[in-house]
Length: 259
Image 1 (tube, rainbow, N blue to C red):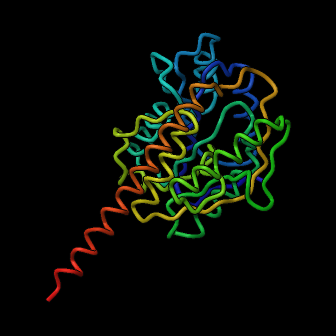
Image 2 (image 1 turned 30 degrees about the vertical axis):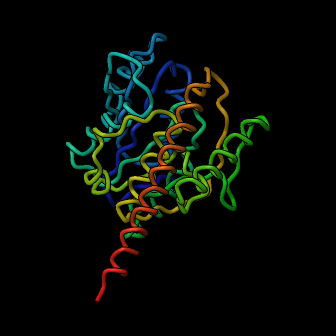
């Protein structure tokens, strides 16, 4: 069944060497959701950008942004968010082009976002009841689960899957974030976005999805991405604890100084 959001919706889909998976993913997406799509291609050497242009010529709902270098997932999404805000979309989605995010799951994320106006965003979660992963080796599952537990411990985020990349944000939430200040990449970008939204009083819901490992192409996961996430989350956690101690000391001094 084709889902048509009541709110104007854009799916931002970053690509780098996705020439085989992109047409399939877009075809499935158009079968399940009526929305606009922005493909953000980082000058893929395999010709993904040219394929994206061809798809855009045949479908008025598909748009393409060509970037000159591979600057990372975070930079691609930020460019897409800014494009969406300039064109006054109401909901802005994150979705991978490699087939790991299932288009038939997106209507449930959108329905949740539309049903509850108090939400700043909705995450498609692998690690809540009903969520699952397929074709993942055990060490990837350990890495993801362990990483999310570490994020929860260090940052106190009330979520099970803060590293997830299948998301829906309200545009007015993105408008109130300093997007230019975000330098994180990979998994760390998703954590960074989550902590910024929640620190501003936003609420994020989790909807169970099934994440399926890509069948073609190469994974973008690397040791550098894992190290960046570990270092940044650790520093954010330390800063958070320092801030809480400082607030406690200030409060204690104020109590002592009362007549």
